[in-house]
Length: 278
Ligand code: MF3
Ligand code: CO
Image (cartoon, rainbow, N blue to C red):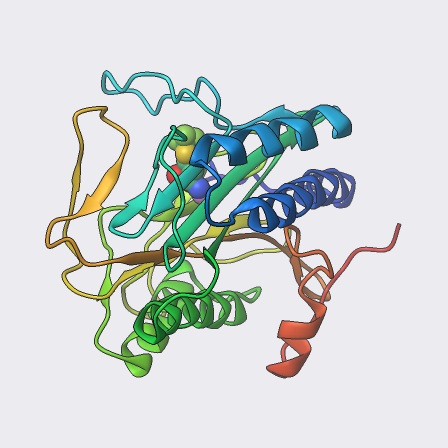
């Protein structure tokens, strides 16, 4: 634990987080494949539970409450369709051709957490929806690429926002942020998806972050539904959400929830890929 209350991880703890991250990656892959026309959002929850069971892992989401009287989250995955930004609760809602679905999943193994999200098209989506998702994914990788030892959280935030604004007239959601992650899913520091470089906590070796931009095709403003969880855009515009859990190692970045550890995306951007040896 650093002096500012930020939990820094040892090499062995980061290796444990990689094992959790791979469970998350596997579950997301299975759910993405299951997100076909005619499937319900609850079907994805069933798929994710099977992955947890097979891995002997625990859900980070089931029963989670951030406090302030929020009811415990009732599922292992968040499935957010079209104008739902985040925290969509799996239900009997049937997925239709052209829907844009964000799938957000967290798991812990031996007490160490991984958290990631992808956005998928059901069948094939309209070009504007595809562009929204791709811009969000690009903004995520721009933010990850700005995470380096000696930098600051604001460098990541500013890079996410800058890339999002470069790619189109998207709403950059400000009501929800990324976060530190480790022995709990949500830790300090917050990682906003907007801000100024060279501000905020310093990035040091052993820091692990979940970076998770949410973009909309319209207004960035959001509202919660009666169930207290489901977050929608106020203007009904569609949203996308991408997330990875990463570790800062002496060699560079290790994307714990990417099957390849982030090697392909990082090296394509000329950025240092920093996995730890087994
Ligand atoms: N990735 C989301 C987050 O970091 C998932 C939280 S869903 C919850 O906020 F159910 F666990 F709250
Ligand atoms: Co998260």
